[in-house]
Image 1 (cartoon, rainbow over the protein chains, first blue to last red):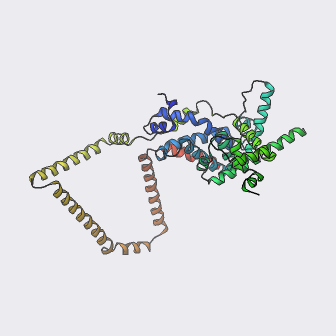
Image 2 (image 1 turned 45 degrees about the vertical axis):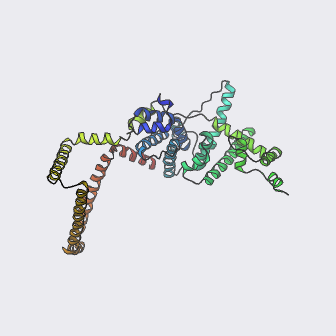
Length: 201
Length: 211
C-alpha cells in the first residue's frame, strides 16, 4: 500500500513510529492548503513560507499530544491559525495589501513578496477577465478582519463545516456563523463597489 | 395568519439560505422552499451566495516554493517510541546501565538465597513482610524529617539568614538559581529530545515577528 493511499490518521500512527516517509506524505498533502491560508492572512510569500514551515515543525514535534479523536487536518489548521493570528496581533496588521508584503518598501521587494494569480482558462480574454476577478476577490479578502478572513476561507475555499471551523478558531459555533455572514456581506459590498468603479471608468 | 403562512411571509435566515444554496444532506421544510420560490429577495440572496461560493472555490490554490517539504523535513524531529528511547539511553550510558543491571541481579540473587533458606515462607508471608517493613521505613522517614525541621532549629536559622541579606548575597543567590535553572532547562530539552537549535530558531522567528 503506497503512502498516498493511507488516511491521515494512519499516517499519524506511522509518524509516531518514526516513519519519515509518512511525515513527508502529510507535509506534501497539506502544504498547499496550509500555505494558501497563511499566505492569504499575511500576504508575504517569504513570511508565509516561514510560518507554514513553523506550523509543520510544531505539529510534528507535538504529535504525541495529538488527540486522535480530533481530525488531523483540523488540528493542523488550528496550529496554523493560532500562529498566524499571533503574528498579525504582534504586528497589529488589520488590513493588508494584495500587492506584496506590508513591509515591502521597494518595488523589487513588493515583487518578491507578492504572488501572481494564475488561471486555467484558455482564451486570452477569459484569462484576463478571470485574473481580474480573482484579483478583485483577493483584494477584497485582504481587507477583511483576520477572523472573518479565516472563517470564510475555511468555509468556502477549504470546504470545512461550521463546527470544525469553530474548533479550529476556538470560538463558539454562533460566532463562526456571524463571522461568515458578515464576511460574505462585506465581500459582496466590496465586489459591488469595485464593479461600480469599473463601470464608471 | 397560521404558522405556515407566517413562515412563508418572513425572509429566510442565513442558515436557511445556505441550506437552499448548497443542499447537500440537509433539507429544509417545504414552506421555506416555497417562500424562496415566491420571494425575489431571498432568491437573489441564494444566487449571490452561490456566486460568491463559486468565485472563492475558483481562487488559485497557492503553493510554496519547490523543495519546501525537504526544508520542513530537515527541521522535523519525529517522536521516538519509548523502546527506541530506552535503547538509545542504554547505548549512551553503557557503564551506568551495566552497573544498575549488576546491582539488580545481585539484589535478586540475595533475595532468592534468603527465601531459599526458609522453605516455610509462602509468597503471601513474603508480601506481608515487605509491606510491613516498607511502611515502617516510610513512617520513620517522615518522623525523621519532622524532627529535623522542628527540632534542629533550621527554621530559626532561616529567619536569621533572611535578616542578614545584602545586595551582593542576593545577586549571588539569584545568579546561582538562574544558572541552575538554565542547566536544568538544557537537561530537560535533551531528555525531551528537543534540539536547542529548534528553540533558538523559534525565538528568532518570534523576534522577526515582533520586529
